[in-house]
Image (cartoon, rainbow, N blue to C red):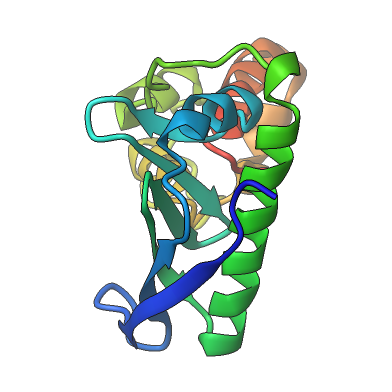
Amino acid sequence: MYLKEIKMTFIQPCTADAERIRFKAKFSTDISEILPYINADVKDAIYNNKIQSLTIRKEFRIITIYGTNLAVSKAVNESEAYEIMDLVKELVNNTYERKDEIEPLYEMREKPSTLEVYKYLPKLNCKKCGQATCLAFASKLLSGTQNIRSCRPIYEEDNKENLEEIKYMLQMMGYE
């Protein structure tokens, strides 16, 4: 087993959402060498080679993996924090076992801008999604607080290619 243990070192209420927690944990082994392999394998990961970090969104949670430690925000409770640590440990160990089969990816995936997403929306400002404008909807899509299914006009036949492009962008960020 490559990564034997993850120990929680810090836990507090989350500054972004008072009903959730944030925590930090330390790895028993420096896993820096595995991060580019995880980056290649987890298509919605955002890797930063300069600071050796990899960020993954799991629903509303933000999980950042560094070479020697872990930082997580918006976890539901302490029990979930331990579940996340187990998931990270399993991800690291499984990736390490399969690293000969994976081509490491050292590049950072770029998050699309609100304007890039907006470009593919119908731009009707119909408010059917609950937002005042399509630009506001694009911003909510990128923050993960809105779902593309809320935009009914994008599902019309004329917008089929645009829908696929938006779905691809959202998939690269780890959204459904």
